[in-house]
Length: 224
Image (cartoon, rainbow, N blue to C red; front, side, top):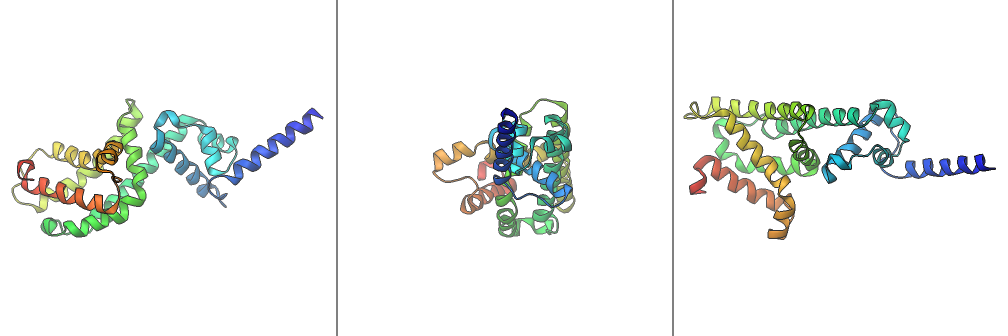
């Protein structure tokens, strides 16, 4: 009798898990991707300390055993999530800046701003994940963040080749400045909302921020 009750309890738990989160994926790659997305959401919302294998399973609507089957444990899930965010951010960067004529970049601020709104706003979760990653002090986080740095560096290098007078600037710090511009609003999102009374990633807020930042980048901070 006790075994039957335990079995029924397990079935109820399994049914509840499947009813929450995303629909069950049809193939293994989609299922693994769903699990990674669930992990990314948890980290973006509450940091790496909030990443829990059971919560990932619940969000994705699968069993805990399946999460362990794909990733082994929390460390494996973090590694897979880091790699996924690296790819997502690189794709976003390519979509926003990839085919832009950087020789007339100052004339394309509006176009780039609209691309940012279209590409970044619905995918801000990946930059929130990066913000959490930036605060971790371990080798894997450092390696993953270095990939992000390289993505931004490639853009800055391309920009330097098309703009006159930039040959002598410190490219490394230029890359960090772009990173500050991208991750600053992520890290300061609660304060931005409290002070301005609006979400940091609302379209109009993004437009105002990009306009101000573009002036700082092209004219200097004191004239912004």
